Length: 421
Image (cartoon, rainbow, N blue to C red):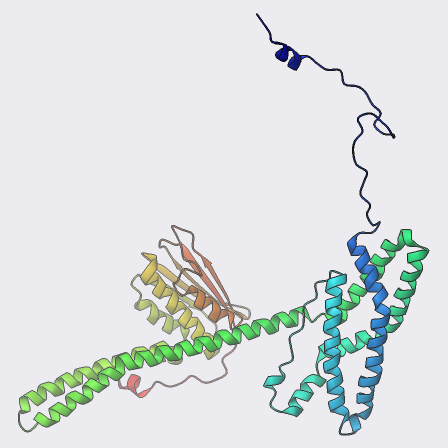
């Protein structure tokens, strides 16, 4: 057996020289020296810059508050006092915006901007001025600028001394002092998280309500134009032809009148269906239980309705509950392939709960194009909840929750068309 020289060399163990791990001139030591870097990390230097700029900015803020706002408050008994004070508060808002930006940049504090004042929606100059005068964001900024002067002097002095004398502990001092700055920013310059969240929700809900109302008006206009209005036009034309033939051909006129009578019945039925889509008479007269039973009778699958309500809710809540169940049962008829369904309505403390279930194929989603998203938005506009539990293969359970408000207005009476029936 012949082994090549290269192979024997590859498998032969080599002696590894032992060298010192450290020390200058050590053989085999070619690692580079550590790079030169600052002793403090970037965030520490940002905090030091923030502390050093506290003094000049606090002097500017204190002088602004004492000159503009104090002068305006002193002159409130004169004509120019309140406008000057309002302008000063608007300036304080701008200073607060600058301080929030400085805190975000140097202190890494997440500070949200408050909602702008709705000055354009103010009816006149006096209402806009009153809106500025009662602005809590501006007044908290005034308080922030007023109390910052002694703090700015203290932080500037401590930081300057520490830079030259106490530099080993400066990072710890900077972090402690800037934590106090962070607390003041969060307490006085941050808007109220709950209030801002609520304002944003109300603005979104208002847009949803406006869009829903506009869509309903377009639907009613389209249904009237394509349905009852077209039938009434045909009815007028038929009666006109019957009038012309009344003397010449009474039999033909009688047939036309009979056809016109049929058109009247169809037009009345379409108007009743349209009125039911706006607000059904049975809901107004007999309440949610009877109205839901009426909706369930029109579903293509058997539906069991259980409504356990000690009293009737407010008309608006009652109407939303009715149309929610109506839309869900339409989805059951069109998309679920179910053999049975159930509707349960009950009250728990100050909430009205609705649960619609079916044994269909499932797979319903809020973004599935079956109107679920619109129902969720409509319930959200009145502080309601909408939860869909629909695994693929079924069953599907949709739970809706509405705020309960007591009914204060009397029930209406049936219209002439319903009384005639």
